[in-house]
Each structure stands twice: as C-alpha cells, then as structure tokens.
Image (cartoon, rainbow, N blue to C red; front, side, top):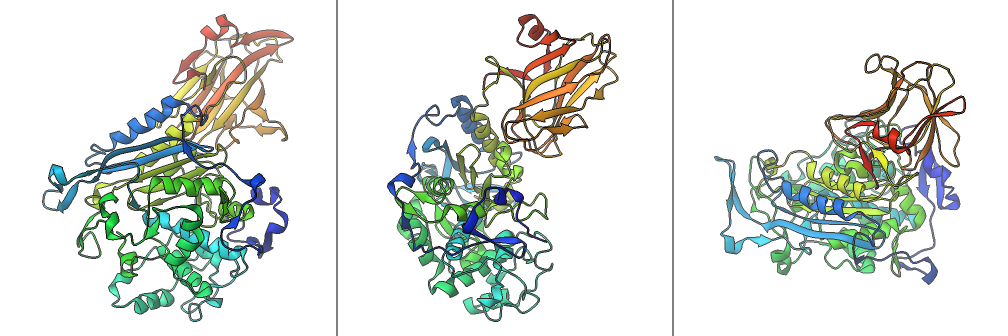
Amino acid sequence: MAGRAADGFTRRRLGAGALALGGALAVAPFAAGPAEAVGERSRRPTLRHGSAERAGLLPGHLRRLVGDAEAYLGPSPEHPWYAGAVLLAGRGGTVALHEPIGMAVRYRAYDEATDTGVEFPAGRQIPMTGDTVFDLASVSKLFTSILAVQQLERGALELEAPVASYLPGFGRAGKQDMTLRHLLTHTSGFTSWIPLYGAPTYEERVRLVYDEAPVAAPGTAYLYSDLNMISLQLVLEKVTGRALDVLLREEITEPLGLDRTRYNPPASWRPGIAATEDARQPWSGLDRGLVWGEVHDENAFSLGGVAGHAGVFSNAWDLAVLGRTLLNGGSYGRARVLRPESVELMFTDFNADFPGDEHGLGFELYQHWYMGAMATPRTAGHTGFTGTSLVLDPTTDSFLVVLGNSVHPVRSWRSGSAPRVAAGTDLARAVPVRPVHGRTAWFSGTAGSATATLTLPALDTSAGGARLGCALWWDTEPEADALVLEASAGGSTGWQRVAFTTERDGEAPREHPAGSATGWSGRVWHRLTAGLPAARALVLRWRYTTDRLYVGRGAYVDGLRVQAAGALLFHDARPADAARVEAVGWTASAD
C-alpha cells in the first residue's frame, strides 16, 4: 500500500504510542497540553558553546567546514552561491562551531543587462553575525509539521482522516481521498505550486487551493508541493481556532525560548536580517524590489506573510535549539513540545513505496543531495529556497545548520546544493570512526568521481583453503557508490569478484555473493570473512568507486589477515606486511 511506514518503526516497539491505520501509522492521543513540563530525570541536553573535543568531534574537519563554505563566497562556478552564511554544527549538548561568513546585506539591486549585482556603498553593507536572522523559506514546513503532530497527539487530528473531514468543500476536484498523511509526506498528488498571488483577495487565494485538482491520485506518487503545507495550515487554523503565527508562538517558540523565530518580523529587526532578492518580473512573480525583512516567497507574501509552506524567520541558534529538542525526543530543558513517539513518526520513512523520496511526517530523510555524508536512513532535515537548511542525525546525535542568503541579489545565481553537501560531509567526517585493531585503519576517503584501491601483495594460496578475515565499516551512496573485493591470479589483470560474509553483534551473518557492499551498514564495524581461490600468486584488492554527484561517509578496512592451513600468510599489523600494501586513494586513518 502506498505510504506504508518502514519496518524500522515497528521494531522499535513504540507500543501504545502508535496505532496502525490502513497500513500507515498514526499517533494515539495523549493527555498532554501545550509545552508539558519535563520531569527532572527525563531532561536531556540543552545547548552551550564548547570545543570540538567536548562535542566528541575532530577539530580539523570543523575547520575545513568553514574553509569549504567560504569557497562558495566566490564564483560557484560563475557567481557566488551566497553573499554570506551562518554555519552552526555540534553534537550532543555542545555547539562546537558557530561561524558567520560573508555579508548579510551586500546588493541593493540586480542588473539584468550585465548579470551583475549592484552593491550598496561599503558603509551601508552589513556583515553576517552569528545572530543574523534569515527568511527560512521551506524550512518553515518543519514548524507547520510539528504543529500538526502536536494536534495528532491531542486527538484533534487523525493521520488517516481525509482533509475534507476538517475542511468542508476541500474534497472537490478529486481530493476526497486526500489525507493528512498525504500532506505531511508529499504524496497528495498536488502539483508543486500554483500562483496564488495572482488572485486579488485572501479568500480567493484559499479558494484556488480548494479548487485545485491533484495531478496524481493521492498516495500514488511523491510530488513535493507547497500546497500540502498551505492545506495543512488551513486545517490547523480550523481545528484550533488560532492563526498559524499564534500557534507557532504559543506552541513552539515561547515554550522553547526561540525569541528570534517568528512570522513577519518587526521593522526593528531589519538591520539584523539577511536580505534576499531584488524581486522583479520576469524572474519573480511580483515586482517588489529588494526584499529585506519581508518574506521572499510570493505566495506566502500574498497570504499576509503567514503560510504553512514559508514565511518563518529565524537564526542559527534557534534552529539548533529546535534540532536539539527533536534529538532529545521532543523536550528541551523543562519544556516538552512533542512526545518521543511523535518524534519517531517524524523521523520514520512513510514513503517506502517511493525509493529515493524517503519522508517522515514533515521531515525529509536520507537525502545525500543536501545532507552529504551525514545522510543515513534516520537523518532528517529540510532545505529552503533562500539558501537555508537544517540536518539532524540521530545516529551520531549531531546537528548542522547552514543559513545562506543564496537568492541575494537574484535566484538565478545559485545552482545546486554544493555548500550544503560539503558542510554535511565535513561534519560527518568530524565524527570519529575509531580503528578496531591498533592505532590506524585504512580509509577510502570521500572524494567524488574517484576510484580508490587497497591492494595486498601476491600471496601463495595454491594449497587451498585460504581465507581472508578483517573488520569492515562502510557507508556509501546506495547503489551509486560501492566497495568491491576482487582477486587476480595474474597479478594486475583478470580481476574477479570475491564473495564474502559480514557479521555484526546481535544480527545474523549477511552474505555478499557479488563481492560488494553499498549503502547503509549502520555505521558500525562488521567482521568479514571470505574464502579465497587457490593460486601461486593471488593478489587481493579492495576497490571503492564513487560517482560524480554525492558520497557517503566512505569505507574503512582494519585488521587484514589471510590464513591457510593454520599458517598466517598476511597480517597488516606486521610492519613488513603493512609496508607492502599498495594504497591508492586510501589512507591510514586514526579517526
């Protein structure tokens, strides 16, 4: 059935906190009011600045994160990806990196004829600071989703209920079977957006949503759409009797102390807000000039700045607190805004029928295209069109905020998501992977469009019964990047794959008959064994290949041993044997 949740959720045995409804999952109502107090024993980390070492991170990779980000202040490839950014990264309760780069306000206009930005005089340009506030664009969807899940907890909403059961009239034009789950997971079938700003009044803009027909039957396709969260906003406002900006303040920002997070920031905030675009037709839907301190998204602007899909302004610290709250299971300090079971739903893939489009309730999951090597099946996050992103990795308890003004001065200057990918990969590298044996392990690196080989010297296995044993750790972009074990009886030609078996504590052995490993392995060490062919001069090698787009965390090999008939033919712990290993693209890493 479309939208069925992944098995990982049921394995976690959330019990009465979740109910199976039509093959999907919903939250059972809890007797909890807004921002329930958290008991002393159940409190989880709150944030403070500290060193990389205190966070359990490697300082060199955090420094590289800043250096890589600064590179995109220059041509990327023709224009800067952003005028400036604020970077925040940490693990546990420690923010180990909080760094502004570039300018919050640099350009007063965009010159279409010359494709250049017209700069403010130097004295009127404003540098980024750690507290600079950004238009979050679609990162706003996370706040709307949290508000919806809160109402699921309280029994005011049901995940599998038709949207039309809350909004009479919404069910026309083929939307009668569209549910709240479809909205939260972008499986409603709605097109990506429609120009609501073209209608003259708020009521007529809402009517356009009601009248819009899905382009695919609900539950049959993943189609990312702003209309999902606009519809969810209408539901929330109907069932609570409160406007979305009031809900945001009362249910999330005030309880968590997010004093720089809101819709429609006041004029007094403007000097501390990053400017966005010189919004003029034809590249913008509206002629507004330099947008600075007001929401950039045209539809959100036409809805009064308060919209389910866009319009929230915030800074890096507030987003880090929100991320820490979710990694804590919904609590921060003495405040609780979500139950742990509800956070599980937000971090659980409901889109198992749409591989590559993994999605929890509101959160995107396992997206290498902006998470980089932080991406795991449990990594949750979201991006915003203005250049913003939040990534949370429960596996390593780490969090990353990248806030850039990438549409300043114009949206066409930015291409792709390279700065976000680089930051995610750098933070993932900052989480140590300790060797199993000795002080170092062989590491493949995380380069794209690369082939790395780790080759053992020729061994005499002609007596038969030779076996390879080692420890193996891998995390790659699924299918696109792979680690392969190969053997050659002819030295450097005629390579054939060698089947192997991996095993980790608490799980049954896993066979790799094609001699390859790809995708997610849990980011833990596995024990590997492989039977080897008989040859007088058998050469073994690990070959790791990546495509040009994205990479995972890479691969590690440790404790390589080859034995036959009780004799030890090779052991990388022996200095002489280790010296004969040919590592092209691999390094001996102590991470």
